[in-house]
Amino acid sequence: MAKEKVVKDTSERYLLTYADLMNLLLILFIVLYSMSQVNTEKFQQLSQSLSSAFGNGETAYVIQGGSSGNSLIDFPATMPSPVIPSKIEDQQMEALEKEINSLVDSEGLKGNVAVTMQERGIVVTINEKILFKSGSAIIEPKDQDTVIKIGKDILSKIPNKHIRVEGHTDNVPMKSTLYASNWELSAGRAINVLKLLVEKGGINPKMIHPVPYGEYSPLVPNTTDANRAKNRRVDIVILRDSSSKGEANTDNNESSIAK
Image (cartoon, rainbow, N blue to C red; front, side, top):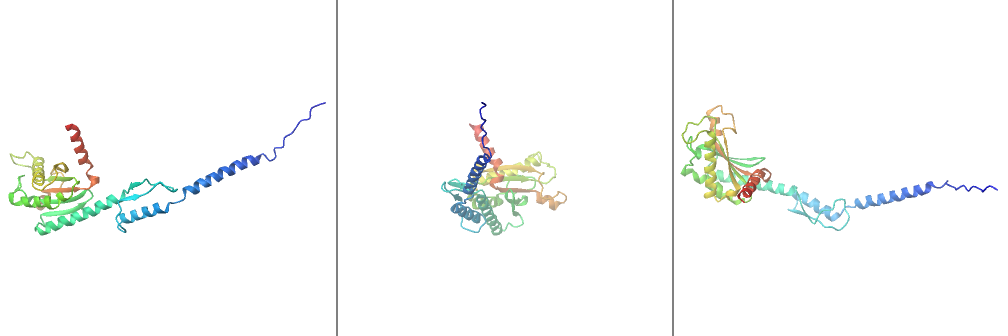
């Protein structure tokens, strides 16, 4: 007699797959729900820090956080805000600009000393005629006080800011046995102003650098005597932190070479 064949009922087998799918979906939604829970305290701290950065609240230098609670972004215990330091530097630069302008007014230097805020920092432009004789890099004794006052009353009070002293000339070729070209003249003027700032103005020599531009960075085209007079100048530049990376790298390289 032939053995009877047993036929299994598979009509409800789909339920196993369906149950697995439901379990996976449930786990997915639980995970998404837990990630969406915002830690109210941390959110408040972030909001206050951003408000302070834009001048609408109390000053806060860091966002304090913790490891407790579930949140989409878990802040470390102390997380510096990249916005706030930049805002503080802007305020510091604005205060410095006002202070330098006040000094210029009190000394009666308006017209010979100009103060401008640029992307790289504050630029104090000193006209050649109040520091040097034509074709000379020697600062006149009667005019040294101007540079010393800028150093003592302003620059020495802002530690950790790099300063550039930039020398500029017009495009008239040099006819001097002392200076072979406008490069040498602009370098001599920048270095002499720098030395005065360091020796009598109290500036840290590691934070100040001379840069000779010669005739190659004019304010205006060298087409008239008046324009050429504007181009003959020394710029003292108080650099923003973002603009002083080159100076900082130079210091580090020099230290490495010395070792």
